[in-house]
Length: 618
Image (tube, rainbow, N blue to C red; front, side, top):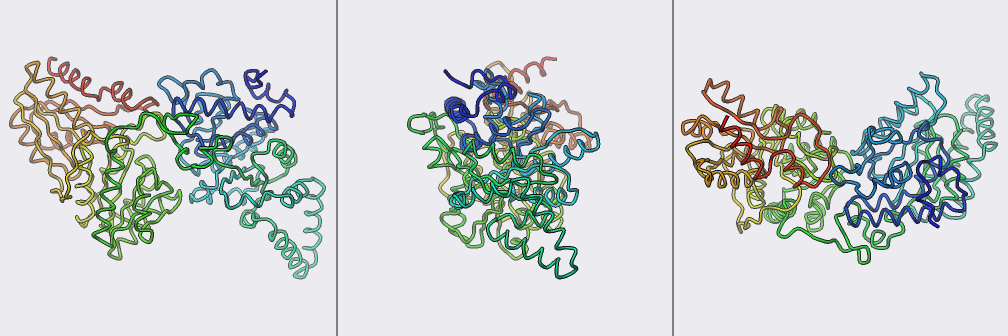
C-alpha cells in the first residue's frame, strides 16, 4: 500500500510513523520523475531536496510555521505534500499549478519566488513581523549554495546577524566536493553540538571566559577558532549565526533528529545539509546540469523527446560569438551562473581565459563588464531578460552614463512558456528604453541575430541585443557576418491600406498575417524595424505617406514598449495617423506553452490578422 495518496496535508504527514518516511520519499521521487518526464520542469534540484522538504513539514507546524524557498525550483515535493497531488499532474501546463511557489496558490506557499537569493531577506522580514505581532511561530529559509553567490543573500545574512531574531536557514549544498565531509566524525560532532546541554555549556563557558578581560576574551576567541577547524561555518558564525553541520540531507532519519534539536535554538541558526542533485534517478545524478531544467524526456533512457528542428536563437548566438572570438582576442564573455542556458558553454570551452562566470550576481556582472570595456576589451554579458531586471542601475549608471561599449545579450526575451511570470522577459524594452545612449536591438530571426551581435561588438556604444527562447524560423544562416546600420529598419513588403511595423520574433508572424490579409483584399505593408532605440523615424514617415494606418507588433509590455515609442514619435510629430498597438497587456502572463500564450495574447499570425481586420473595419 502506498503512503503518498494518504497525505493530503502536512497534518497527515505528521501522523505517519517515521519508519514509513523513506518509502514516502521514494514515492515522491517516482511521482516527480514521472510527471516531469511528461511536462518538463526542474528535476535535479527537486529530487535532491525531497528529504529536506519532507523532514521540515514533519518537524514543523506548517503553515503556521513558514517555509521560504529560494528560487523555488526545488519545491515539487512541497507541492505534493501540501494538498496538490491531484493538480501535480498538470504542473506548468496551461490552467495547471505553477512550477514555483505562489502565495495565491496555497497557504503553504508563504512567499512567491522564481529568482535566486531572495529567501533570506523575505524570511527575515517574516521573522521580524512575527516578533512585532508577538506570535509564536518558526520561520525557515531553504537556500541553495548557488543562491549564496548573489550579493542580496549576504546583505540579508549580515542584517539577520545584527537583528539576532529567531530564524532557521537550511543551506542546501549539492556541491560534490563537500560530500566526503558527511562522515562518521561529522555526524558525531553535529549530533553533539545540537544537544541543548552542549549549547548551554558553550554559552556559559564563553561568558565565563569573557569575564577575565583581555586574557579571557582571547581564550574565548581561541576556543571559537578551534571549533572552526572542524566546521566550515566560520563565516556564518562571524555574521551572528549559530552554525551546525554539515549533515546528510538525503537521510530523512538524521535530518529529523537534527531539526528537532535545533528548532528551539534562539537567534539566527544556519544548518548546513549536503544533498545530491538528481538523487534517486541515475541519469539526473550523472548529468545534473542537463536535468536542472529539462523538457519532455524518456524515463528509461533519460533522452529528451521532441527536440526542436533547426537552430535555436541561443545556438545562433553561441555559434556567432565563438566565431567572433576566434577572430578578435579582445572579445570576452560573461554569464551569471547560466553558461549552458545562455549558450556560453561553447565559448567557455574554447576560450577559458576570456570566459567569466560571476555567479548569481547580475549587478556585479554588469559593472565587471563595464570595467573590462573601460580598458579596451569587448565584453558580452549574456543573461536572461527577466534576470537583467536585477542590474538596471548598473546598466544605467556604470555602463550607459559612461558610454562604455558593453553588449548585453538578453536571452529568453518575450514569453518563455511553462516557467511563467517570474521568467517571462516582457519588460526589458520598457525599462531600458528610457536609458540614454543605449542601443536596443531585436533580430527577426536567427540569421539576423548573428549580424546584430557583430554590430553590437563593433559599434562602440552600449548595446542591448534581445532575442527569444527556443527554435528560430528556419532561416538559412549567412556564412559571413556583417554589421548593420544602427537605427535602420527594412521594408519586407509595401502595401497601400496599412503598414505593420514589427520588432523581434513577431516580424515573421506579422509577415504571415500580411500575406493572409492580401488574400482578403487588404494591401498590407510590413517593416522589420530591427531597432527600438534609436527608432527609425524615416521609415515610419515613409509608411505614413503611403497610409495613415500603422500597426505595431511586439512581444514586450505595451506600456513603455516599442509601440509606445512609435506612438510618442507620431504624436510629437503632430501627424495624422491611426494606430493599433499589439503586445503584452498590463498584467502578468501566466504559464503555458509559448504557442498557447501567443495565441492567448493575440500575437500569433492568425490572431494578428484577425485583430487587424476588426480594427480596420471599425
